[in-house]
Length: 115
Image (cartoon, rainbow, N blue to C red; front, side):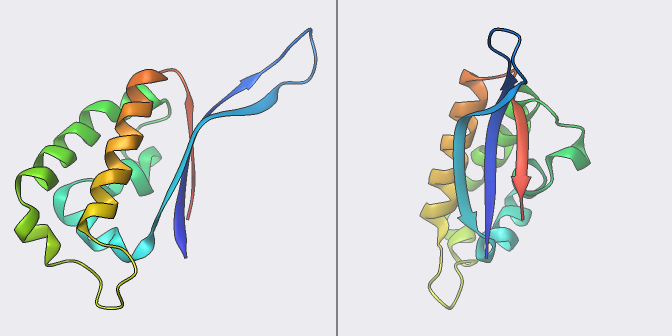
């Protein structure tokens, strides 16, 4: 199972019914959720509404803080690598960096998380 993380807008062209238009789509295995919890990325990526984040711009600060912690301590967080080999420190780091970059680029986008 994996987390799907999408930034989107409902865009209406020519008075048509709004269409779900994704600007960023990414995902990561749930096997990395404990690592994400430990470094402070879990709520921002898995449960953004729980921290009051509805637009991508709301996630810039929490993602930056979590990434600062994760990036500064690779030895500590690599200990959370799942024993089954599905996912690792670098996978979470890469995914969170891409998600933050998308949030910076599309701050008004809405957030859709599938767990």
